[in-house]
Length: 169
Image (cartoon, rainbow, N blue to C red; front, side):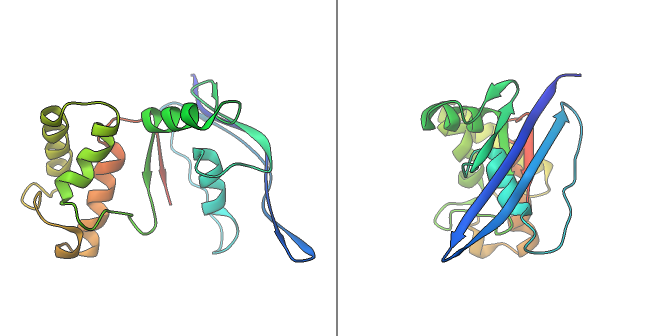
């Protein structure tokens, strides 16, 4: 089976005064298409940092990441943004929903950024929200939704463009 994600020798170091904090230390990982991987550990052990490096949100201090065979860090920011936008979905700890947008608009956004028409984006976003049980909450803003409903909006937003990889923090 083909690799969806490959990471080799990832390090992420932070300097703090005289000391160096090793947030990610020599991590290598291969994830085949169609598989699920759980990265577990105590709070503060570097899971979020690792996900950020694997996704291209944050650059590693050293090492490489390939998404569907394309080197994420061997390219410029525009290429990295394109690879991330077309191949990845994200579910963040804090959901990161835009408070001035409705649930529908939050889910439409990644589709519009990919160049879908407004009509197509609206239809696909509506289907995704209905699939997570929020068909009756399309026009509610995040503040008008429960925490669980906000989480489901975040899930719909992460999968609406059918990414090869979904990263959940």
